[in-house]
Length: 559
Image (cartoon, rainbow, N blue to C red; front, side):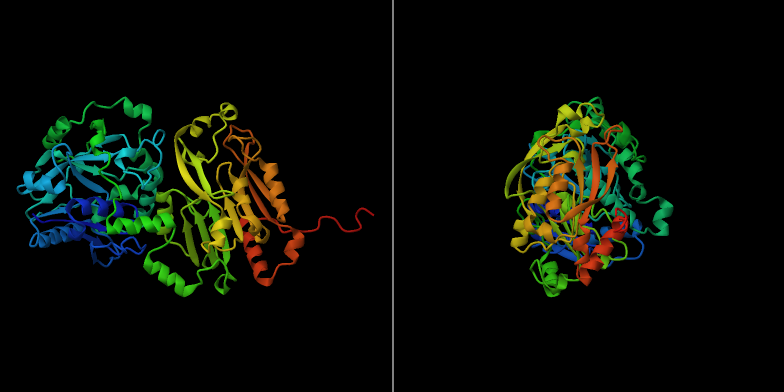
């Protein structure tokens, strides 16, 4: 029996490799079709044997048109295949592993015409579960699913279907099989979900879709979205858990109220059985290997690398960089903090982010920079392995251990609770520079939760040619063994960098514990700058809103 699977995507660097990995294993990578709706982030390059169909983007997105196009494409595939699977890129159809060897086995024995799945939303409980690690199976990192009437979709068929917008229903009554589960991964990671939401909000919808309320969830603001999609704490979700993995009552209720698919709030929540744990991962298909190679090595697609090679040397120096401002951002999950308004096209942004999801997001985001280099690595003062402490609050994760003896007096203390530790590889900026992977820095911004001193040491002599540094610092040890503000000032002074501005960060109930600090070269060094470096320094002072240096006292004041 020949089975095809297809999806439609626009800039999906995270989910497309997962989709290709799972369905390629299920039906054969050569039987996958990706309808590429104008992706421009490189995520549909290097798909191996997957067949890509390029579809031009239109000015305004229309859900009715999409459903009609998908229905026709499915009918066309059925002329060459016995059965066809369609799913959005974040939807994974998994039959009960104890009853079926895989998806093809299920289709052969349980899909005479078409079949609906049991819809399950995968939930992320951020106060107890760390961010998703793409290098590990997805379902093994999450504990809970919630039955979703909307995602009991008819997505596997041996006959042509006419889908309604959203693909929640078709031109036949639903036929839900209790042994087929649709795991919907939209909520698998809170930060990833917010990032995707911001991309969706940029899509312009047709008047037809707006009048019908299509895609309303993509137009929520961040606060509405988080309240709607991530309402649970660990304590609250355990209070509503239902034992077992039997959704028969929900399926019956869905059949009874089939006209109302918005019943999620009353649906049961269950723990994911271990038998599903390994099912969704970036397994070594050709497309998945290509993605992992790009993600783990911090480089673009072959097309991007060729383009880059034609425009600039593959070296940390060169004429191409001479009139560019190299901004190094260490801990760059949210992108560059400053907009660098008016000089974006002369910025070379070098961003460090060890989290694969965050790094992939950074690579996929549109930008106006002269160049963007994303390095998926953690930095320190030497190469080696260290333990990363993942905390309840993602922003408190550190290579140092939280100092609970100090933190216990503050309301922010629970944010530093360690929920998981990972062994990660770290390197130094100097090592990367010597290997030709990163350029000489002009500006360094560091936010590494207490590890700033070690990161600065890793720059070595490069600090002496740097024009400015911005970092987070502390007057008290919130992490064990951390270097404090005075030691950072002393280290930077040795490289000719002096303190220009500080700003308290109010995270400690009114006490001044944490600050943001800005350093630049000293005034004598400023006078010796070349014309190009004078422009760079002026751009830095303007962006940081630093006061112009003036002599406050005349030479004769103290005579």
